[in-house]
Length: 192
Image (cartoon, rainbow, N blue to C red):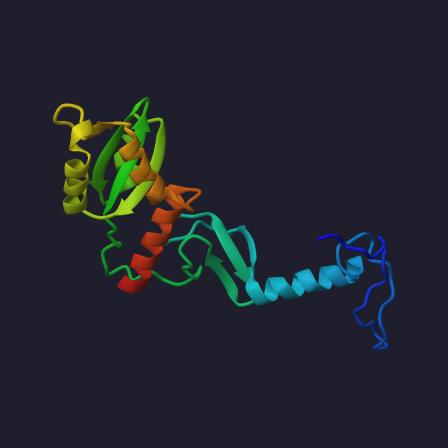
């Protein structure tokens, strides 16, 4: 759809006197001058928040990305309110995941409750996906992909069926770690 209005069309928002501002839009795709665009952006930030780096890492999930609201900060990954106190009397939230990592042309499928610690000890090229689940889910996946299992290990050939399953898990997820952080934050919120 093309805009038939000439570049620099006059701003339609009211000025101090209540009449249309009339200043040129400066080539914006809508009839707002740069000063009114700035006001709209500022209003939107107070209404829906402004994404920025958190002043400190999120205590619930460790993410550095947050959303700043007039009432304070919230973690962009898990929505934990910065400044909210985690109940130190409770154990940390536990989220069991089945992880899928690639090393060259093979995939490891295994479960853990602490993927950062576990994956720091395993040589791999890429984290492909996380799936919520424990040993039972891991066992089901090992049975599901038994035809491509390498010996009796947790490593599998990167067969099309394995790739398809990982693709479904990763659909719409830019960063598997962000998904895991969200799960941790949700567990912490439910926990205490």
